[in-house]
Image 1 (cartoon, rainbow, N blue to C red):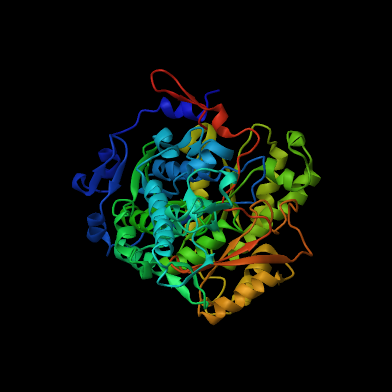
Image 2 (cartoon, rainbow, N blue to C red; image 1 turned 90 degrees about the vertical axis):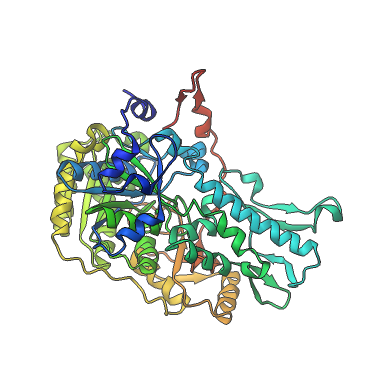
Length: 555
């Protein structure tokens, strides 16, 4: 059996101009990065901005387990299947981060015969957007330290500088560091740390900005820390806004590539970002909706994280109205949610499947709370039995959700034709999209609504530190922003060990972080890290390159 990278390397890609032509994007609206990658110019947007939007299909998933669910693979396969049905289709996906690629995942551009290519480029440096994010973020950090070194005219409290540094790799040793050591020539000593690039507010701003000037305004609004008398200090006060923006002059343009079957794909921003845990940019989504009749996009992790943020934050800011939601599940993962270990998943256990099915049921219920029709994509594994598949299908349909078997990993677009048919049936239904909460509600009320309605919690508790931060945010007038919940992806609760559909639990908010430029408040719950460490066997250890430049071990 061929690996993902071997399948991708054997693919016959089309010149990117041919892919663009499928969406009526002209050659002079492309900025080429070799033969198979391009950025689409902002002039192209001016040409199509008044066109009607296509249909927007959001792909999400159950809470992930080590058994896997296959969200990106399904997104790609569904886009190819819709293309096979004669629909003018594009996908809008996030760019993989090298942190997870070299750490946990080993790549994130789909899998099997439902991939985005050139897969190697996409999983590695691509077009340099992440470099722009990293550089802009660290430029701002350098300007902060220089300001303190040069006399600290703003009276910044060095103990309350909230802006850290970033790196697009997982490195636990950098979570907490001291800078400025070694005497006056090296700066003013202070404690700080590093986050992974994709957790940066810069990433969130790239994802949420409407255009370059909107980005400039957001960059200026970033709160970098506080003065000694408690006043919030913005990036614009350091004279940084222009330089930060110019670093994004190319990065703000969406990237165009293709699937193995030649379906156009916009890839731009978003992996692991606090904005939506795996959601691409507003700009790329809007481009796709103007150029295509059907757009498949995704939001990362389980629907309780990714889909909720997509719907409550991205759609609110961008005035997007999705038409349908696909929830990806596997029989294996559902059995794991029902209590089986990874080693036991090949055996038939209907009781475990029934119990684990409650996780999927909850996500279907949640999608309906937003007024959207739900379609369940059951990602097929060879070990699945007809009895198990029939049970999942019947349980979904009893809840008013359409269900289809997806075999896109093995068969590409052909394996997604049933899913595409069910999605089109769902699109014929009238969506009545609405956000879950009013952004003008108090911060505790917004968090409580998400915890009760989406997670199924009995309520929310705030640590003393979080209560102090809450009072400060309210006093500074930042309480009317949407909430970005940071929670484990593995459970509906904030405890990764509670699988299935847990009951009788409360959510503990341990920290509130302001992302004033992006325009939301991050509520950290449980054990969440914005600079993850590497596992015992990092994915990087399986990778290599041959003398002739052929990459191996990238999955």
